[in-house]
Image (cartoon, rainbow over all chains, first blue to last red; front, side, top):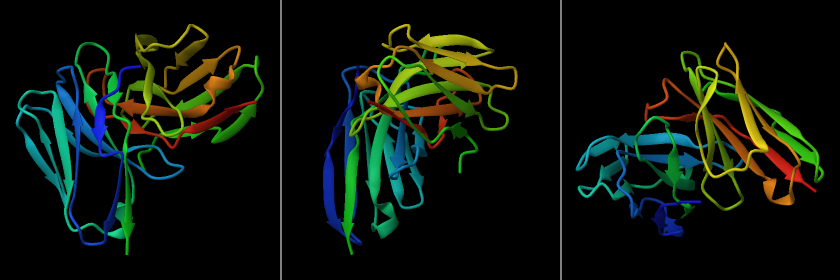
Length: 112
Length: 113
C-alpha cells in the first residue's frame, strides 16, 4: 500500500542530543501528524499540523508542515531516555474519509 | 491513555479460521477506523465506520469486514485467515469522519499459524 518516505529509519544518539527526522511524499496532504509508538502499545499523537508552512511545538518537540504540502519534519531537543521509541509521520489527503497514510517509522535509541 | 480499548490483546488462530476483534471508542467520539500494522511497518488503513456504516476503505479484500454499533463501539471481522494476516490490528477513534486527529488503542496482536 501507499506509504510515505520517512528518514532516517533508525537513529542512535547520546542523551541530551537533538534529533531531526523527516517525511516526504509524492502526494499533497492537507494534514500532517506525528505519532510515537512504544513496544506493545498503539501510536500516541504528538503533534498535528493543518496549514502549509505551519510550525508547531509541543514541549521539546517541534514539527513543521512543508510549504509544498509534500513534506514535514520533526525535531526533538535535548533528548531524554523516555524519548526512545518509534516515531511515525502520517498524512491525510482530505475528502470524506479520514484515511491516514503512514511512514515506515524512525526507531530512536538513546545511549545514556 | 487515549480511552480507546481493544480486545483481545493477543490471540492465535490457524489458517482458514475466522476472527472478531472489538473496540470501544473514546467518549464523545463517533468515528472508528481500523488499521493493520505488520511487524516493522507503519499502520495501513483498513476501513472507517461512521454512523454505523462503512465510510471509506483501504486496499483490503472483502473478507475483512466490520460493524459499528449505536454506542459507537466497533468490530473487525476477518474470514478465511491467511498467514499474512498476522499483524497488530489497531482501532482509532475520532470526533468525526474528517477530523485529522486519531486516538489509537493498544491493539490486538493476531498470530495466524
